[in-house]
Image 1 (cartoon, one colour):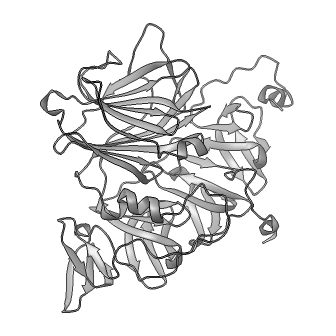
Image 2 (cartoon, rainbow, N blue to C red):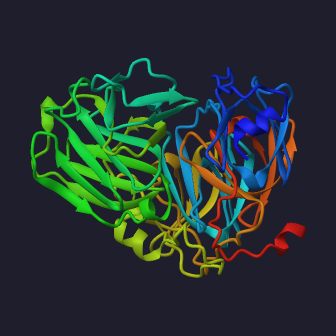
Image 3 (spheres, rainbow, N blue to C red):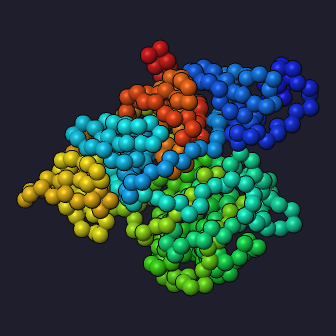
Length: 460
């Protein structure tokens, strides 16, 4: 049933216009209709949506909902470092590392308090300096410049959408070493160019910077002032398996290194033998290369230290990491990917062998073969986990995916909503209570129709 017909049932005329809603949030249905408003309540079968377009809140069946988006709240955190826990089902969660044991890894999160993840479901734990974003958005068209006489891009509810080939650019003052991450969604094949280190917002063909071109599963890298490709990969299979992805480019004008990550996985790393150097600028461009629509959201720009964490080596990731898009429900079994048992990498390139004894006030105590040592948590790059046979949680009816502004994403079985919190559970972490305002997107019906999921779990 089209949205216009649904609204007629609530007493509206046949002339329907979806106006901007002051809450800057939107629900999208399986027929691609959308309605601005806000969530009033959710249970396993229905989502109740409040909108200025509706005379009263309306209940929609979850089976007809793709997702809802909203302007998420960013928590103010003073910690100097953060941990990234990667789970065997493809989820990744950021927070402050609270404890490590043979059975679980605990994180203090801003959106769900302390969460304890089962060791057998944890693929890796890495530590990094907490990200200070230089730019987050989009929050509107102000500050962005479009190419051509007829603008190709429009803005609505924290999303840029293209309706024709064309570019949109902004000077975000990229540092010499930067990370540019964004969420992309498309219809048909992905046709997009990302340009970084440009010095001209007016043109889709600047004289400086790097151009990353996405075509189907292939990605090409070249300098904007040359025709020769620096790098190419056809391993971005996620672009064919789905019509949305988290894309991240890490680039350095010091080393010439350019890294491509898709959904948190390193796809390839290239090195420019002739680094762009001093003529580079701080502009970033998004250019649609196809008449098929492209959506860009969740843009995050930050500094990069120029180093690729050891656990994100492309060959290791491709050989050992479970595919989050794999529909096989069989638990994955394998060894941990955290490197040699008991060996932890430090940010200065050194290694230390031992076992984490305790973590307190940002300091980690490690028992080594010689003595106990205490070092600041942010000096660690990886955390040694006891070797186990890894398993992947079962996919259950009622699973949803919550996405946060920092790139974290969690799949859990939705139980319901209490006040401003979503209640859920997972084999990964048990039961949890999530702040609804922390999510920028909640996705429903996340598994393909062909997925071999049992429905008996609904009664549990």
